[in-house]
Image 1: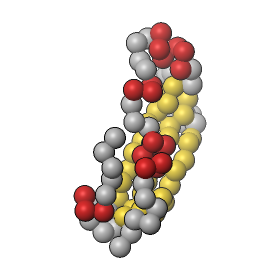
Image 2: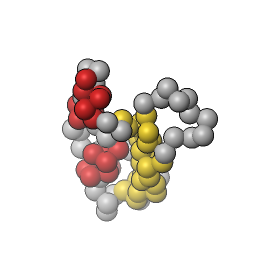
Image 3: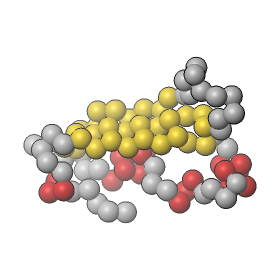
Length: 85
């Protein structure tokens, strides 16, 4: 994973990451999708240097009432961070 450094983002620059997560890892694997092969917002948050970054939002929310009943996604995970001076 690339390390997010101060020189790669301007002061007050925003970093936003979002992902729909599968409720059932076993079901995802049975469809040929390995969730652990992808970078999650939590992975990014873990690697941010909090002396350089302020996490403004790190939230998990359920599906909207408008979601299709056929959708397999149960949660959306969102990370928003701002580079400090």
